[in-house]
Length: 476
Image 1 (cartoon, helix red, strand yellow):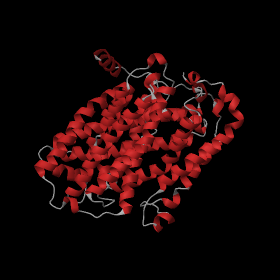
Image 2 (cartoon, helix red, strand yellow):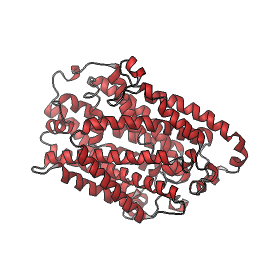
Image 3 (cartoon, helix red, strand yellow):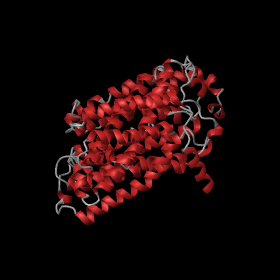
Image 4 (tube, one colour):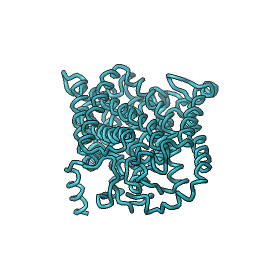
């Protein structure tokens, strides 16, 4: 155990050399236990607290109903997130590179472009909360310096890469976890909850299902990240250990701060959840907010790192002969950070409304992708892919565009439209049933069988060529 811990510390101090290339078996290291801390530690932050607060502010639920909806949404959504965990150890490539196996080399660019926007959007959201929290505890300091300072810490972690991020989140699992428990205890036993805390708000189905959707999309939005943080794991890590470590790490790391957010949203005056949080934790506010702000830097590093890998994947798709190295990852990380800072500075005033619309929009475009990816990996190919084809100019055996995947992706988005309920658009079915958003459930229910059927038919004639790839051939 001590030798393994020493090896982890040594890896964490080294600059990561690989980017989107397959990770060789001699470079594999780590255990499934590391997957728990990378998702637990990175989720204990203010953005998770704010997301939980939506249950009682935007969706106007009472506390017990909010907690139930948050539990259901996180536990259901995390299933899809954690199923992607096994893909990294098996294939040794980032998630967006592996997506070429479903969509084709050029067909994957649509999904890759969408997730790059997602990474920058989450990064900008985190930066807004960093600035707001640090400005609240440091007299005379505006939000902009907080955004820049925590952002620089995020960039450094993203530049050092995979092992640094694992080490950072491992540390924050303990530090931020302790701060979270301290904050909850302080609010309940020192500050005290209002006498009518449990009777505030009234149950409504629209808010209940809306909260489930918000919690589910928080988990599903991690699906494009997961393989990026398992691709260095040994091939024999195993599907079950990778799944359960990722599942419980992300579920518990998200659910606990979300419940805190629901508590803060009900117990504090209307307005900023961060300001309400500061009021309820009076006496320990600087400690808790600074710890949470530093914890945000670990989540930001995850977004920057994945964003850089996805951007390099996008570029390498267009220029197949290019093999990006660490210098390219550094440059791209800095550029993406610049975009995120600009977005954070422009969205400060209307952050909460913009954030709600952003996460719901993510739900509509990520659900069809995760359905296609998981059906293809587990039901059609059973984890057997030709990794070399991912990097070929013509897409190898997967081609440039996989018609069934692109078609089902578009259909998966379109079928959701009548069921959408958001500030930007409400579909006719959602209006008819009182504003209840069932879009993501419909998207999964339609996309999964449709892709299975179409892909099965289109590959029937290629059985012979696929059969030559035995399980061991799928590795680099």
